[in-house]
Length: 354
Image (cartoon, rainbow, N blue to C red; front, side):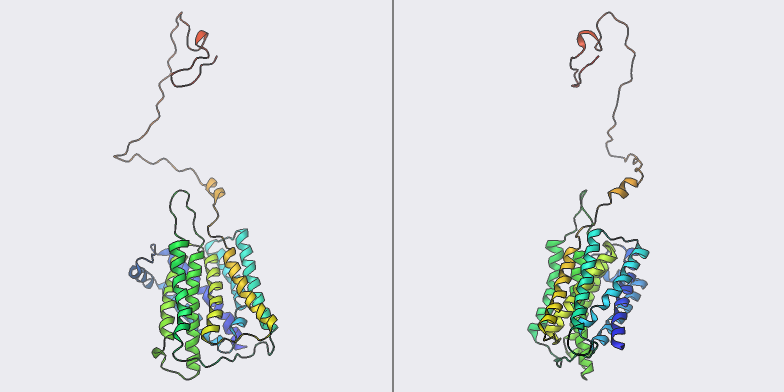
């Protein structure tokens, strides 16, 4: 039972690390990917962020140790328990509430995890039996590394450059962090895959890890993924961003480990369809999340009216002027308020009525 406990604990540790990242990012000045050195200096100088990084690394270690003896599909349902922790911390710590559409997406996430768990339960053999993977080569095929790494780098660039640009202006709406979650999830899923490769190499007795591409790709994808995650947590809500990130990372881990590390799939057709269906449901859950946050019209109406700003030197100020009312002098001529003037138009376009 050590491996399942490690798998569940790792997911909770990930959520705690993300909460620390969110708390630290809210205290920093705006982070920007266009200024990487400045961004690195800001996050590295924040003690809470560094502490969250250490906890995140500990979660990676626990997850890799659990996956040494567990199939990846059996570790995926552990996220269902951490999802409750995420929702509670998001509500209590940051006051985040989900919209009905976001609740629906969460239900689809739970359905994906339940389908994955069902594929493990119905698989032949012991429920928590060990997994037999082929020996991991110290130098994996270049095409396999490219298939796993290149989409993880291209996807975040495409999402930010063409799909999810931050709009500005009066009618701009805040983003929920779907692009940040997908991009960071793909990168952290790649880091998790190559971290599992390092753990398998160490288990096989290979000690010269730095001579293999596994640690280098792990560091590259991990640094980029954590940086993108920190930027997203500063701009978006924790609950939605971390959910999209985790779903993307776990689906990416399952597919990449099958290609790169020989993760076995069941021979039974029904179980294989269930496992593939869990990946499809995970993708549908990501698509179900709204891209923009809902407008808080009711909250805006409850806010007090803003006081008028003092006049700024050098700016022209438009002031409406109305002439003083003067009592008309008595005269024998018909006035504009009676007689033949009634019904005529004034110069300002209004009509005189009696």
